[in-house]
Length: 509
Image 1 (cartoon, one colour):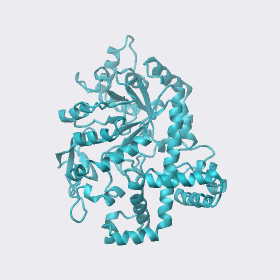
Image 2: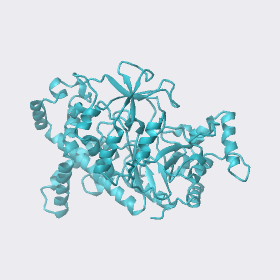
Image 3: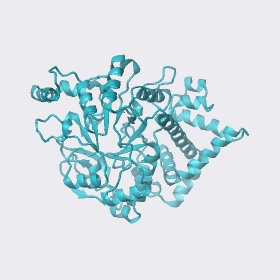
Image 4: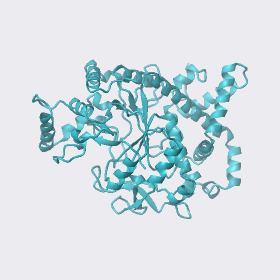
């Protein structure tokens, strides 16, 4: 049976890829090193609306570890507190201007102070304060299935100086009922502050989503297929993962050697115990997807091929070379997700080693795949990324967060590959001219048959390799890139608006 992926992609659209962290800071706001859900996020929505772009794609928004990788998070559910707008809390009366310019420079400390103000409002009789208190209680109740374990997990992680749960004393590591009961009592205030922080995140997120919808801009999210070993999910639901009797990993996730790395990528995530997940009809996965469906209008499943078969690497191996493909129950999982969430709009990240079985699974559920034009110019006529081969049920990109910027990519090409790019452009145009990157690749992407065409913000800004977001296979200098409005010229605004309108991708909801 072929499923229908009811989606926003029944018409041609365009989008921009920009993570929340890459937003600039407001001129009058405290800058803690990354973008947030404040005024600049709303300004970005306004920019998209002004040029007729209707999709804002971002990376996973969950709470990261110290390396800031959005693909290795402390929870598959919890939002990243770093994205909370402190200025919005000031406008609510939960922080003062003095708080934001005072000695408290840690967002954690400022959020704790905001909670103190929030709690003091509970003693007031104003209806607004009472309403917010009630909303907080409702949020905690609705999200209890993940929030209670996450809040305790994070409080314990703080108690043990940020050590991973596998290094905690046995009672905490193995979730002794008596030990956890005592911990909840001892850490009650900190647990409540963590719950409050998540309440603020989800509240600010929904406000942005509502504003974006009013501007005909849809939010496009991303979930890593795997979760981090050091996460609330693995700690609280260890039976759902392939762990030994001591809760250690015998095998870890990754991918074999490919375009990005000659030794593959050893991600180090635990693999799922699919038999255990199947036993409760994928309850954890369905709830995870329900949370994402509430946050986003479209959700990309990163490494979709892992739902058909995943690369298992012995944990003792230092690289990803010596692994094996192990079949996963993707059909049963997706059936359960669509049964619970019939209107969810999913996109499959189907890059890398894709087999006929992976394609069949994607097509069975009518999921758009991804086409990257930077991969198109190999000289092979049957290259699936060549613009004229891209089918409508696709999301076409100049490049993704894992690619170099298009200008950086083009500048790095040797003469042969650059000649292939030039030859393709000449064959598809009446005039003969030198390549003008990145705009020529943007034009080709938007011209394609793909229902959704997306470009990273770096390409709109015509930025070079020094502005790339991530280099796969490396562990430093990633995830830090931010733009500023001064980089955006009037000519660039007019160019993206023109190609968007010319290719029939303008907003027409």
